[in-house]
Amino acid sequence: MPASPSLLCRLGRCAAAIVALSAAAARAQVAAAAPQPFPLVAYASFGSTMAQGGRFAEVGWTQPQFDAFLGGMRAAFIGKPFAVDESTHRLSADMSRRLTEIDGGNKAAQAAGEFPMAAYAGFGSSMGEDGHFSELGWTQEQFNAFADGMRAAFQGKPDQDDDGARRLSEDVSRRIADIEAAAKTRASEPFDPGQLVPYMLEARKTLHLQLSDSGLGYTVGPGSNGIRPRPGDSVVLSIGAVAADGKTQLPQLSSNRIRVKMVDMLPGFREGLQMMTVGSQGLFVMPPALSFGRGQWPEGVQPGSPLIFQVGLMDVIPAAPRPQN
Image (cartoon, rainbow, N blue to C red; front, side):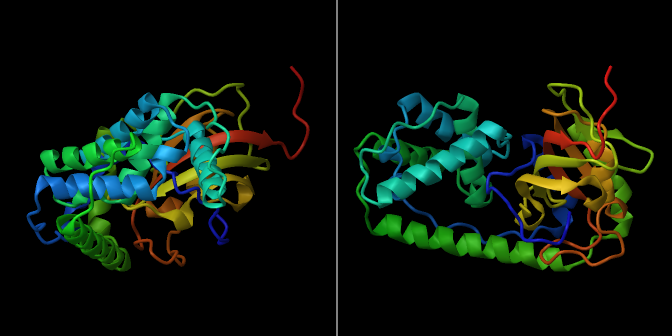
């Protein structure tokens, strides 16, 4: 990708299965301190506070939609987040618009657009991953209390805030800061070249990838019209990037509905996109030789590491007219 500011939609994520790759990079993990004990009512109150802050009771969702959202958060908590698609991106944009209207005093904003339940689940998983819920050390019972508190606030009956909830909020903030600081530390340390082959083999097995002669790991879904990009074409696509640990999001390498020339893309994209057709989704695991190689790596990206990309190909703009069949 060109070294321009990211056009990331914050929901750009890889497929749920990438989380399993964390085992291949576990040697670099820095375990956070054990969480402090809090009563379950503190988790419920914390959940209510989060739901109230997100104005979920005011955005026009139905109970089934909110339940799908909580299901997505729960999936992220157990390390199996739902993948997102274009409908999730549109739901995120709709939420941003509606919250802006509500903050502006328009309490009677028009009803939310129609989105499939999978969009709400993907949105919940995105929030769960943003909050590092799978890394906080919570038990299932604690997360359930948190989810119950969110549901209560959505139904207009939030749990009351108390000192325990405030202390829990402080503890969560501290732990997230520790987790993100550890991730930055790992990103500054070059990836061990001796681990590259084992990593790619594990990725191939875990993600059911095929490996090209160049070393690109890939899986590509069906498209809608059979049109494939050629080397001189331009493409419109969305990209969600994740680090080698399968968890750390890389917004600096992610974009939503960006138009770019094939010749300006990383080698792994130039190869992988030619396997896709318009409307298809692809998952690519790129060894360093197909991304930034021996050149300068973006800030916050571990030098020499494999990179994981989920790509949606939305359109192809041909450089020259295509022959008619």
